[in-house]
View 1 (spheres, rainbow, N blue to C red):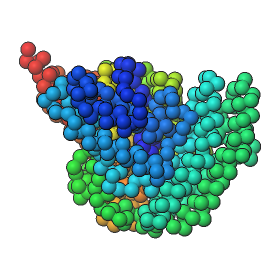
View 2 (cartoon, one colour):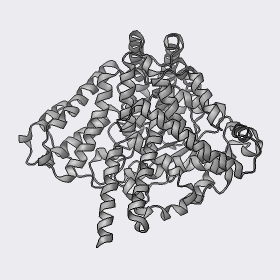
View 3 (cartoon, rainbow, N blue to C red):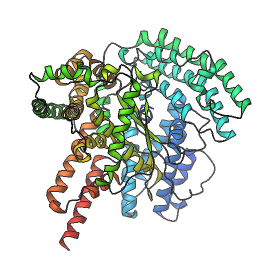
Length: 607
């Protein structure tokens, strides 16, 4: 379940659906388990390619069935009246299906598969295998509540993005509203089971959850977050009245009851420790998370050392930019100046959002110089919702869906404007919008002639590695002309390098929360509010933050290799199209794709 939440989150980042898939093969009636049993018998199919194709279709179906919330994000019809089953029984059912999917790696002989099938099967096995390795060995289901982007914060997000273009769509929303009570009760049951087993979140990562829950309760149903889909409807008065009744009589009481549980039961039983290594089998758990998030076999110590090396390198570059500004004083004094001088801050949320939109408008026309293929899906800029802004990060991206007609959105946090400096805005926009997450995720959404599950993958090292690599493209996009903005880009790269040190420090080497905060203060120009929120995020999501720098370093390594081999024949547009052309993939698959492209280019040059 934790993996599903990360897929739905800031950096979880889910990818929209494919428009061009063939009609699904007809299977015997029954559930996912029965269908998989049918697929296991090769005698039921005329070819291995056909059997593999059907396996991929059922894998997609199983993912959507396990997470109707994800289906809504993907614009998939048929699931909008349901919620994810987060009860202990639901967890067992999903694990049983995942085990069969994991066993399917032994159903096929590679020699009987086409080269294209082999690629897809390898990616499928990596996705299923990593997921199964986590949830079969470690109780991920107990760690699904946090104040940054926990499961409770997705409830209003999902309701607000549901389609309203038909009576059936509105009935689905009503069904979802009625189902919130059961969803929260199931969540309470699972969290209580975690309490009984001593597997709970650190206190600092859930301290603000009661406040968030309280903010989701509105005495006037018309002002409720959950009434948003009905606000601008001119008809359907009966359905609108029903929505108000459900909000008043079911939704509000459900959130109030869950708030009481979090306040009176869960919070008193949270742990004072921070690292996941403090939990039963925690060291092995963290190692599995490292492998899942980075798609590498690097150890915590190796990643920690890479972080220390990158921090040292970036300090030298930051020192040079500081000197170029003419500032008299050391780096700490410069960081204080950047944090405290009023010239670097806006006075109103509207000014901040407008400035972000202006940056996007400057970047958009330059993209064709660096990319041969651009997505069709548009994007916009929104403010982070009030109910989550205090505990949330500076900015994040939510994918859209071509099929559902929903644009992607870059969300900017306007809480505490004195902690949102102008010099960070260009790097943030590049990472979260274009050519970062919006470009990468939307192009993956538009993949053609690949199994549908490929458009739904979210290998964090690739997705976030691309986002961080994109920040380095700023000069080629005409950004960072201002020295302070260049320093901002280095600050953000430093941020990701320090994550390698701090995340491993907390979860592998026993660092305290304060030690992590102090390390950031020593080496970063970021504000204390940002530092605190981010450190709490690393504590809540072990290993996720490692993916950024590990992925970025791999993409930069592959670009340098391509440039060194192809020399003047190197085409940056073609390179980027290759990197993004297969959607989200493990880093070893990405390396294979780039190596194949290099070899093909060499052949063209030689001929």
